[in-house]
Length: 66
Image 1 (tube, rainbow, N blue to C red):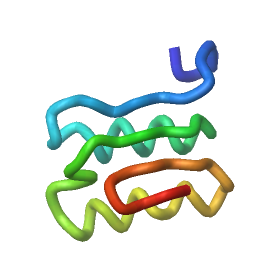
Image 2 (image 1 turned 120 degrees about the horizontal axis):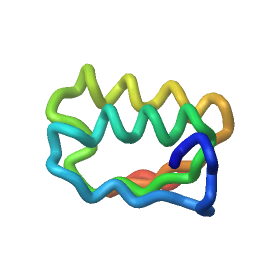
Image 3 (image 1 turned 180 degrees about the vertical axis):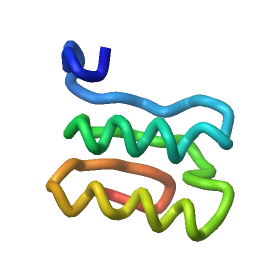
Image 4 (image 1 turned 30 degrees about the vertical axis):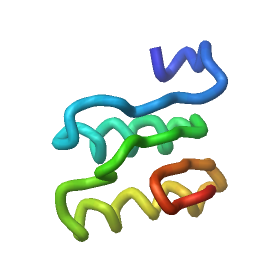
């Protein structure tokens, strides 16, 4: 479904331990994304989500605007 890009944006509202993996898939595919908190369960995981934004993909979370 992600590869087909049949939607304009995504919202991550899954159990917190799944947020980072889902965000990385969506952002790597160039899909603007909103994530509920917590973004990640550790600071290290949270930092890995920052990298896809360097491609210009917008993402939003608590206290964060793309």
